[in-house]
Length: 160
Length: 79
Image 1 (cartoon, chains in turn brown, cyan):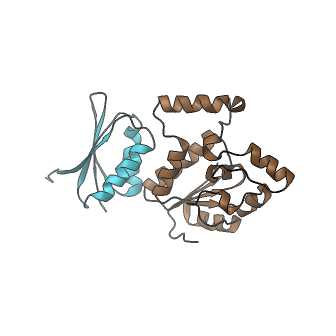
Image 2 (cartoon, rainbow over the protein chains, first blue to last red):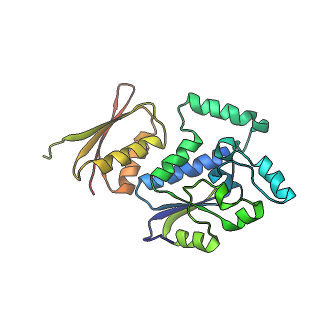
Image 3 (tube, rainbow over the protein chains, first blue to last red):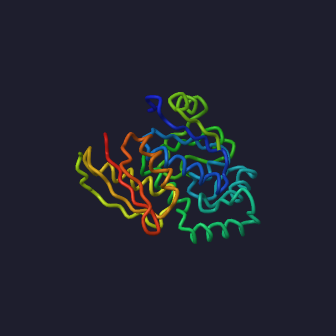
């Protein structure tokens, strides 16, 4: 791990909902812009935010999940009022109307500011997501010990 | 009295959280220590966000004022 000092920010992204992922990236960007060493740890549904969006999975269930979970960050819906994708479309329109940065761009901004994105090895195993299914900007896969070490060096640790 | 020389001007009109902070933090890196950045924004969020960002990042909030339809603020790079 490359974490040093004790002024970092660690964000655990468990949710794969548009609103929560947006909040997570917003906070990460704010922290990084304020000069904090910022690490985001993506686990379970949160992994979708760092996936390329291709079909994943090997077993029957894994492939079924890969179909439902396809599309990456552009295809994640809000935690409420999704209505099978209609809500997602609606939210995107509203965000555009109010000049809010789209999720994919927010993620790029975070990466440009030096925010490190860490994928959780265990969730990837369960969900049958391979390293090559993730965007190339992510760090190596890691586990709870690595995340806790980042947290040890942080003033804030958030679970979203 | 310290003379104010604006090293860089930023147009943040129409941008909303967290982009103004990102732009200011990037601009600060481009100027010399002691230089001042002048910015115009329309998002009322900057009223609280810019002073807070200055504190976290260790820079100086020189001034923040309401101007026609928005806000004008000055930030000095301290380190």
